[in-house]
Length: 410
Image 1 (cartoon, rainbow, N blue to C red):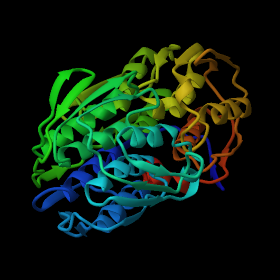
Image 2 (cartoon, rainbow, N blue to C red):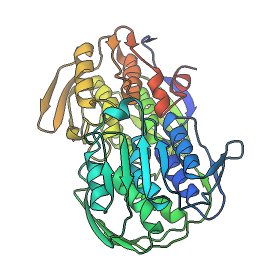
Image 3 (cartoon, rainbow, N blue to C red):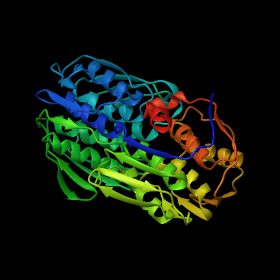
Image 4 (cartoon, helix red, strand yellow):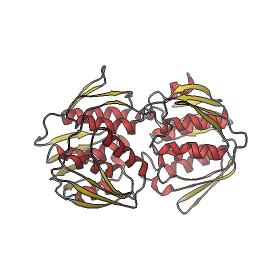
């Protein structure tokens, strides 16, 4: 357990590295035809899980140099992977691994074992692969070969599995047309596409929901700098907006990361910020204006937006909450529990929550459900708490942001 006493935020920090960007770059580096140098990798659990997986696939990682030597053997009889708790590693490597073998066994750990993988299993089967699962949960056994030249996929449950299909496509013998219906989390697919292009892969955009990806392509090794993470930074930005000030370096102003949307919400809240090159400065809102926002493309922002809504003077509305159940926890249910602990009124609507902010929250014991984003958001709530907040478990933050508490308090 960890006790967070009420505090006001005033810090200058370096943004932590984006695990979303890092994992995509690691896959592409492993599939390249030459060495890749990656700057800015962190030690988050998800990045370490991806590193372990690409090494199992046959790549070599030299940590001191940040060097990835690519996979040399691409016709293995079978491959066994353990993706830890990384949902992206699971959904992307389920496809990418089939460029290297016809038999792939995938296991995981922790909260990922409880998460439903119906969309992934359906998409793998749709691509012509044979799947064995534990009632659409891990472990998975995948066999076969993708031979389709055209596929239409549903993106209503997110873009990670679709990113996996995109990452596999250039290494198929022939090209494939991919059409996408009802895509959620579009910015994350756009991140995948941009990084593929950075590594020299050709993708032909027919329209915003349709692509042709030629087969038998060569992926070129690169020197890559990992972006700062808007998801992790959102916690510090909200902390400054509700209680103090922040100077943060390392965020990309024109990033494709979906959670960059936090700036729009904070502007609506009345926070003041400006850019000085790649340095972002944020200061407290004097108005604490209630806001309305849609999180369908950025569901990871939900926990910290709930805290922001608690700090507002009146009713804020967050739309798009139907995508929160199948995360590290059922984040809508968990944050409703936390709002009750905070003694902040709320009302659930169809695919939305309305929170009646009163600028402060009550302290108390918070069950993090071993969810990194719940733990971080609950910590930030101490900025407006009347008494200490106690986390049942704090080590879960290492999934995405190992230095979170150090950056916040030291």
